[in-house]
Image (cartoon, rainbow, N blue to C red):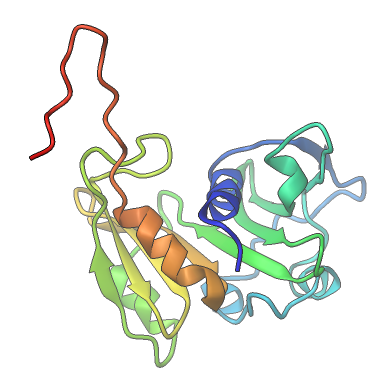
Length: 201
């Protein structure tokens, strides 16, 4: 099983752009045709790089391992755009050649109903998890609730203020326990020089 640090690196790459992103030279399509149903059918740890391209076509951007970057060296990242916005990201373990995780982003004007999104994953049962207020601010937001299905290996990020789904994450079953720990983990407080840390009782 990978360490929590390796999993965190994958989630960071799904959240923003790192490494050497190179556009596909073949004029990628707009990807307007496929929907959440196709995404929900992905199998983490099973689908290969070639199978992803068969299902979704050539990616618009590809992040390949970079020996000079501790983050980018961990995974391969396929990025698919819808218009100018990132719609789908798939990470692939370069050692196994199999899918590691995948994220589907819900943009303004698209279907963001929580129950409808849950219904896409037949047989999955979901439990809500809310990050602590002092969780990692650049990765997690305490205004979000993560509805996670242990038997479906899927996490739905729901904004409780806007009351809509922001994204859906597929993850390998062997990484799920570490992912939940990361969601619920509190960020250690940093004490300044003029402060005194609390005494242990």
